[in-house]
Length: 256
Ligand SMILES: Cc1cc2nc3c(=O)[nH]c(=O)nc-3n(C[C@H](O)[C@H](O)[C@H](O)COP(=O)(O)O)c2cc1C
Ligand code: SF4
Ligand code: SF4
Image (cartoon, rainbow, N blue to C red; front, side):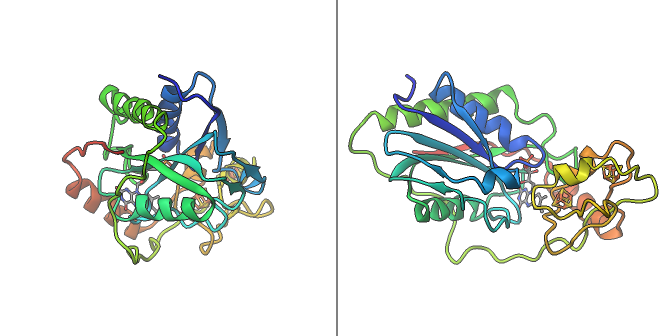
């Protein structure tokens, strides 16, 4: 059964793993969800109000067990006690406090969490971790979240689910590495246009502002010449430690 009102599928997804899951959830709730791409700074700056009869499906990747450090992530969104279905998408380690933090952020913007899920995607730092995710079973779990949320919202007396995580949220330090360009840069600007937090100045695309940079590696994937890359021993060490520790595939979890 589809949800009776409008469904908006919003995500922050620098490398596309989160987007695939958000689309599956929203597609199970509506035949025509509206996409709202919070990865783009210009979209985050656009005000968007939601009525009580709509639903927001919102997904973020897990960074350091938390919601990515994007100051204006939800700044443009305002709910009217609007139901929300939340997703935390992670690289096969753990979500820690990310769903709880996302729920708190949504609460502060006028949304009410109706359901949530955690899902696995390839890890940003290694193609070998979470390879092949989402699987068919992963996408079926995402659709089950969408269908279950639509069923729940058809009942007038629904309440928000208990979510994993604790307050105060996990503390973290940003990874000591970040990507930069080398002399193969042809000045095409693809990295500048791709960066979700404007950490690359158009005049100097080989440089990176390390204070803004999320280490999402979207610019590395976008660079057509291989100029942008993380060239650091710390990155290689982190990658091989994660590859050693995260071999066992984790499974999705749904919260209603
Ligand atoms: C800076 C950073 C920190 C991350 N921290 C975690 C983490 O704590 N747990 C985890 O399982 N995956 C972690 N990941 C992996 C991402 O959650 C995962 O690759 C996610 O699917 C990326 O989402 P996207 O493809 O939508 O951009 C991290 C990735 C980055 C870039
Ligand atoms: S500069 Fe940093 S934040 Fe911007 S795309 Fe590259 S890794 Fe991501
Ligand atoms: S995407 Fe690569 S080649 Fe293009 S401007 Fe950025 S660093 Fe240079």
